[in-house]
Length: 410
Image (cartoon, rainbow, N blue to C red; front, side, top):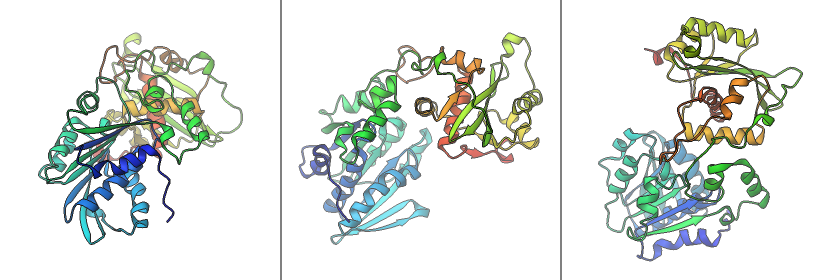
């Protein structure tokens, strides 16, 4: 294969381990900046040139993420260099052979606090943690603790978060003390990215996400979450037939319930109508059956392809399922959902139509918590925001996190 062209900063990643000056490397900065590609290729080259019959760990938010991001990018380059690759999918292992050497690479997903148990007890010669800032601290620290073979090194990549994030304060700010090489990447460090693509990414983000993902800065989120969205962003619903219909729901008993009716036309999803009920203001809570009737009225006889719903609303999900609706549990990752929703709004993938008054009101009120190091949004004026976020995440995942089935209820 034709070898890819590497930028000077990527070449630094490929070569840093040739000297014993550092015990770790940290690559942070903008998205699509080429840091993960260079890091994954370098990790395998280091392992195969320095070790024989040792074990290593490749970690991302999920095992599928390891395959999709780390393995898929590194494998063509390694095979082009003459290495042989064998994956045992059932055991989440990859064996790499070449130059008379053979090493074993385990795949791990660091999604939640329970993930650290999966890596306990393993002795490793090296570990690569992709998107380390998104992983639980317990998993990152456990993975680092497993790296106890002589000559072992740690490899990190991440996009920036807030300046109070533990990884920023304890690894990036303390890089010299930890003998870690810190390299900050920008999109210009990726020679595979054209100027037009860079400009497109610059248009996709706003506020804190622009400064983090485009400029590569560790900075706090503050103010309105969607500060670019105002009343002028509301549009008239287009005339003519829609190809598909879906409904997104944020369920509430004492808290407000918010449902959105979405129609697709020409690859764009329009929020054409909504239902919003605040039990506290109305002085009466509704039952699951009453909410199901509200949902039917919102659907208005349309063929609803699926209902994407708050995953915590088990009883309401079961009520809808028994009435024949196709129900999907929403992906409730808040920060990722906010980022993707902002992108969808700015690129025109979703459009909020006039008449969706609750959504329009909340866009003007939905704010980040003040002085909060965890990047949290205020838990108020967020119900339409949540149902919109659920809907966008369902588009990204192909329709929903999972189909709702009876065993999820009991």
